[in-house]
Image (cartoon, rainbow, N blue to C red):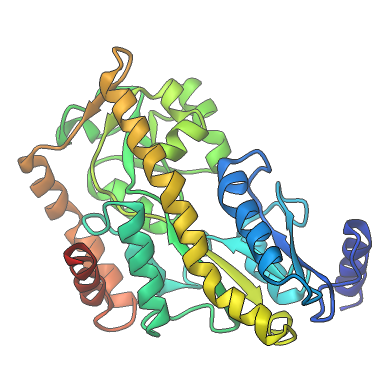
Length: 332
């Protein structure tokens, strides 16, 4: 306990605010991704600026600590918020297997196909109380990546070409999916993907098109198999004590923040994915393959046991509720 308190005191002194209590002016927002990331400049910073404008005179503001300046480990972000090292943080549920099991459904293939579908589905299911997890936090926003696909240094012209290829994955669900469709799953951080593909230690990676470009995967893995292999959830969560200490006005602005953050994500992230896909399709140096109807059927059959296993581990009926939610979103 003494070590923990000393660590927190030193951290607070280093970043220039007197702790993350409800009376602090700055709400420290821990961001483990690099400060130069487009998500920081085009989503998080605009949101912080908007929040601070909306709460002017409320003696509260959001301050970004990007690049892991409060803690670099993506898996430790939720605990940092719980411990008060940060007031809020961006977290990835799948990085801590078993802690947020209901969020596993969003990594299943064949459901959400876009950033908008995934983000609306996870936000609305969470708001309705259908998802377990994060009860000890205030959830500021939920959103997702685009649909994951395979990027490889080797050609992937169809389902059979996946067999035996080594793909970087993140977490147990992506591992199960890659293995189900015949690949070999290798768990490693996003920052290691391109280097390990270039060195021939792995053949490729499973990610959406934006991540593939941002982390230079596409530079060394120019063959893209555009299968719908699930989306990744991101959650911005806040310490409940810090939230309870805010004024009613600040809480009202926080309640609007989920829509604001998702709107920014739709504004730049979805179009970035489409631009990357179009560029690869037009490039002589890249191959973009859409699975045939036969390949789609084979993928569906192969991952059916994974979906069944996940359905048995999450809240009863949740997979069906997710499927219905996606259909509802598409019909709007």
